Length: 236
Ligand code: ADP
Image 1 (cartoon, rainbow, N blue to C red):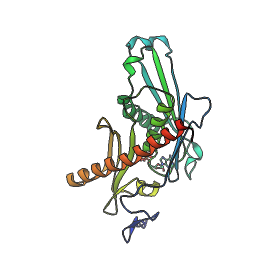
Image 2: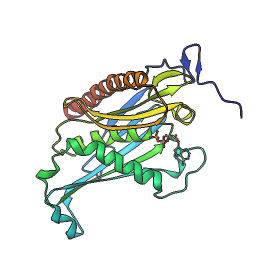
Image 3: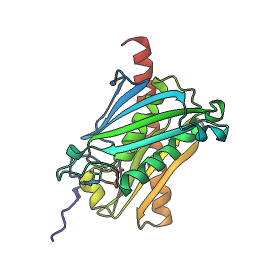
Image 4: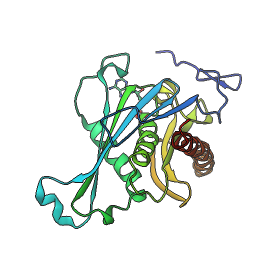
């Protein structure tokens, strides 16, 4: 099969420069039944996050840990990709749910909520690459909108290498044909990295360069998250 070129004259297939994020949209409280919710779009990738709780933790034996728990379910809708995805959980969604929980956990004071659960759902309505990081950004906003005490927001993005070029925010085609890709999340104020996953091969120099790009992109995303929260509470 002939490989499609992902970089032409310094630009990507969607016309972006290597360090350019896609058009990002964020909206709060899109699910009326949730305690907090958010929709985040990175280009054509759309995640809707819904947070329920804090609420009593059942079954009761789970309450013995003396700390609250965060439960996360990441799900890709069957219609979110071109070839229909079979519905229901699979190994990929189980793993992604877990890494999202670990990415968000450090920001929540779970020890202050014994016998309590906070449930977060991330539904991918349309998938065009970088769905786990889009879900993390949406869940972080949804947790804040639910009034969950948090140490910081969590901002997340992907970075990678395509056709020998280091880029940020991979779309679906780039992700599927990349030489390497990394999913990254951080708590910007605390300076903590809470997600770092990498596929493919990179030199040490490339990893360091990508980590710097990821941090810079997350700071941009963080500013958008702060703005959407402030605008919402100002009633704009
Ligand atoms: P992420 O979406 O977090 O980057 P992956 O690297 O596993 O996670 O997936 C990359 C992209 O591949 C997704 O964003 C989506 O566009 C596509 N993809 C993932 N799973 C499927 C699937 N079952 N069917 C079709 N496309 C998929």
